[in-house]
Image 1 (tube, rainbow, N blue to C red):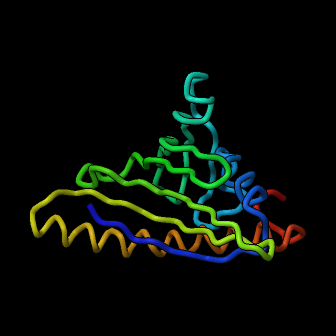
Image 2 (cartoon, rainbow, N blue to C red):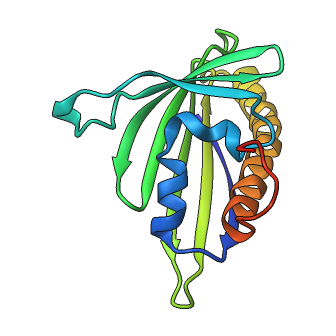
Image 3 (cartoon, rainbow, N blue to C red):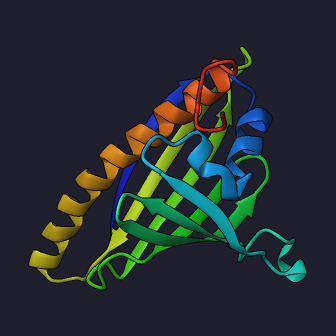
Length: 157
C-alpha cells in the first residue's frame, strides 16, 4: 500500500470546507477534473446517513463510483474509488481538515493505492500515486477557488 498526500491552506473555516465536501453529489461544481456527478445511493441510517453514500463521477470517458467509508465531521471524510482498472485493488481518498487560528484551514488530501506486495506491484503503486497526485492538486485548487472566490464563474452556473 502506498500513500501520497497533497496539502493546501484555504482561507475558509473547516465547517465551510466541510459543507462543500459533504455536498457529495456536487463535486462537479468545483472540481475542474470532474465533468458530471450525482448521488447514486444514500448511506444507511445506522451509519449516520453518510457512510455508505455513493456518487457517480464522470471525468471525460471515465466513470467512477465513489463510496464514503469514513466520516468524522468536520475533520475527516474518506471514500473508496471504484471503476478503475482491476489491478488497482484499493484506491481511497481521505480528506483531513485542520483549522488554523486565523480562520484558515489546512486541507490534506491523501490518496492510498494498493496493488500488491511484490516489488513490481509496489513500483506500480508509486507510479499510480504520482498520477493521482496531479488529480488531487486539481481538486484542491478547485476547492480553494470555490471557497475563496464565491462569485467566480464555476460549473454551478
